Image (cartoon, rainbow, N blue to C red):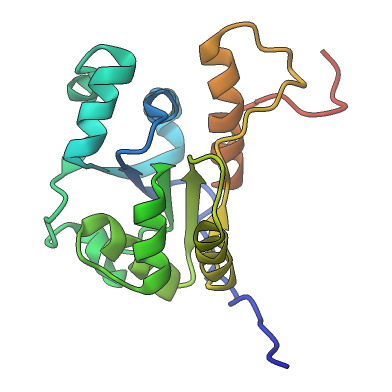
Length: 202
């Protein structure tokens, strides 16, 4: 029987992080928006944020949120096939990549090692450099192919963080519900966001 061992991770910077954010065409643009909003408010904790947004992601954003507000961010955006982006190489030393929302097609290509665009290439780099890849999977239900792809990425050192809200903090709006996912993602990424902590009181 084969035994699988998760690869050890390279050490992370304690303070100023270098982050890649990828936004795919899966439903859940609100997660991406709230994540970008939060990153803007915690600029003291990162030195660089690069954003990749597919054309399908822009269309879904416009459909779900009714606007083009992804154009309003002062963050640096990269085209889906811009392989000159600094995080297309391990020498760029980006420590974390968050794919939010992560489509099952993107997940499958990463699991198969197919680097046919900047998102999948950046994810491949993050995994090979033993850094932190967080895939915010947004699909329901999962089929066996999805589950096996998640297993493959997990065994390669990635983190599957489904876009599953929590309700401990008693959210009352759609934004508050979605924020429970975004806060969890940022927590996993190592940011200090002061979010809800179970057992910490009101």
